Length: 191
Image 1 (cartoon, rainbow, N blue to C red):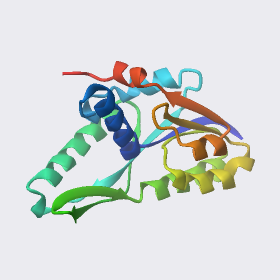
Image 2 (cartoon, rainbow, N blue to C red; image 1 turned 60 degrees about the vertical axis):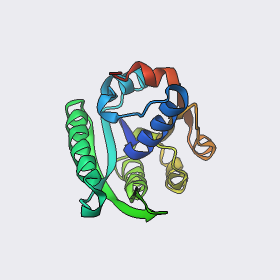
Image 3 (tube, rainbow, N blue to C red; image 1 turned 180 degrees about the vertical axis):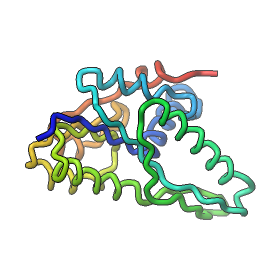
């Protein structure tokens, strides 16, 4: 067993929940470009200090029928990748963002990130045998991978939001850390 701690962050899940919290409490949109990821995770995980931090996002394709929205999303993702990279995070592209028309409105949905995170849960617990895996995602699809890996000696920590905790992940992991809204606001650069 390697005494190594790895943080796996579902980037889109983090953004969606943060956005919901910002809208509910501040009536503002959460823009990840204005968030200090590095100091935030150093603060939240001060007692754990993960050696490796991986953020997962889906590939955004250009769709001409979006009126420039897909171009803007691609540009924002590149900027975010650079911010995260310089903050010591690995940036993993997994899956794809698909455009759909729902009631004559264009909507973007990501698919495939949870599968890559599940594969990495298996890799880090069964093959690399790390001591701790911190899972920052509220996606229930990760539960089977965690359940299958619990007996490897790896300690699983669920890092979720106090506002919307995932009870299944709380039950499946060894420990839970919940992020308070005020802590999220503390690391955001309001303009």
